[in-house]
Image (cartoon, rainbow, N blue to C red):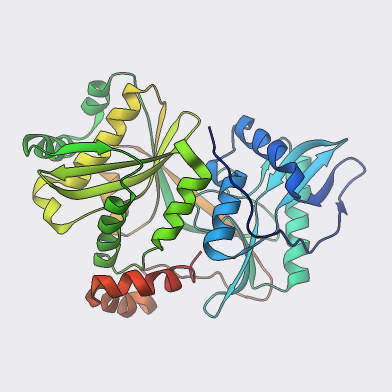
Length: 365
């Protein structure tokens, strides 16, 4: 169940109703459509938590980006939705993204007609706004003519049996060894959404050590307020010290550990392996059916770590409609242009990164 709160920022659509055919009409999202929109997403097989209006409110409240959400409908019935945000900064310039800070996004539609109507409406909006590009993070579909595909990310998923030991037996030998290392080390698990401070301190240190700016703690508070009981925080303790933690979302029958990290002290216990196993084990016991390990950039340490779990790896063919920009953007940390900045960030004192990080992280939505 999703807990929702009031909108703090009004949607400011820039397009009039767009009649793509005699049947399907595309119109801007308005707040009175909130329940119908979420109902559509929750019942659509390609709907994700990032399509829900809770994510819309979280991004508005956390970053101030302008929502440009679109609805395709026929005879008053929703046939498709497109969550979309306008963001602009000095690095990326103006862009339309579906959806910022999300693994998944793009068009969620019942049929090809609605999909094409939303796609054309988004392209029209991108040209009218004269953005650099329109980005659709759709894991299921290739947009086709007028779009270019960027093959930078992959996602990892695992079907969950009811018996955790059956799942354990399916992991590679080395991964099972690392999990049991944490078990034998006496690590214990605390699952409590009230442990936000514990999670944040570990997460901030972990991403700093990777050379990555951290989100503001306020953003995680907003996520808890918007998603309610769908948020789960699990932390790993060595005695009285927390050494790893993960912030997860539960959506339908899926668990998605979305933000996670561990302290350097946790390495000797293989705390990361133990932590993600505990998320898997707990999900099995509760009857959830899918573990979604989220996305990773090919060639990164995160990608290497996730390949060691023998999970299904699938490409994420994000689609770009270029308007003012002539080439696909490349803001990946494996881009040599950003290597120096990453190396410098690792050396900045942690308290400073927690102050500066939120300003930098919003540059790469």
